[in-house]
Amino acid sequence: MIERTFSKVANWVAHLAGLPWTFVICVLIVVVWAASGPIFGFSDTWQLVINTGTTIVTFLMVFLIQNTQNRDGAAIQAKLDELIRVSRAHNHFIGIEHLTESEVEEIRSKCEAAAKRHDREIAEKATDKATAGKNGTRHAAKTTSAAAKKPAAGKNASKKKAAA
Image (cartoon, rainbow, N blue to C red; front, top):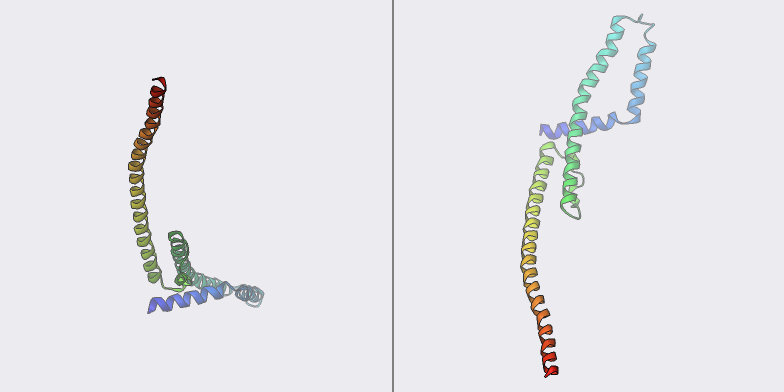
């Protein structure tokens, strides 16, 4: 419950922080603060206001943005894993970046297990094909060499008959 709520809040804050209007508002705050410097005599309290405000916002934003990036990165990786594993991605992978971190990790684990199963199946088929190819090649070589000898024997027999 808390993880889902935190994920929603982190997504919302990260979205708002990335808007152009958010940047404009922040610039206006700094301009107003700088313009108010002469009014407050550029006092220590005046400087403390901007320092404290920016420190608090930065501190909180680091954790929110990091959480959002972690989930986005894990979701992108899970999507890429699925695309690599199959020729066509499944539609249910669209939007998984909105899931919680534990939900994304569960999907990644399932993709990795499926990829390992697929790799084992491909390796087994390749081994079977190589084994069948070796057996078939030996057999084909014997058959080819025996077939090549028969016409030669037939030609020799024809020459013997012609000589007689």
